[in-house]
Length: 127
Image 1 (cartoon, rainbow, N blue to C red):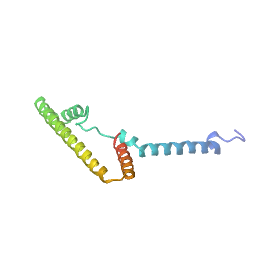
Image 2: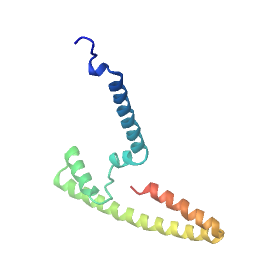
Image 3: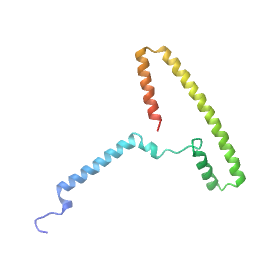
Image 4: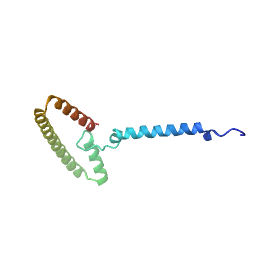
């Protein structure tokens, strides 16, 4: 190979590789910053849909529960799930009441801004 450099030594190839690497880095960082990380690593609590069964199976396996213990644990998880749902309903009512009271003291312009703020906050919380 006289007079010709190897392709990986070509400055254009190196610049292109650098650009591809940096673009991947930027896109990956952007996606992780704005929500993908939370979706990938969000544990599913047992009180959510399907989470109870996963928790029950995991605890049964890792703790080597007897069938009687497994049945008792299932009852405990059911009771807890019902309690969490009751608390969620109460929290929803408290939020609605609070929002209504706040809206009563705001001007029309302030109400629009407040609604926008609440929408942004809710959008960040919903996966």
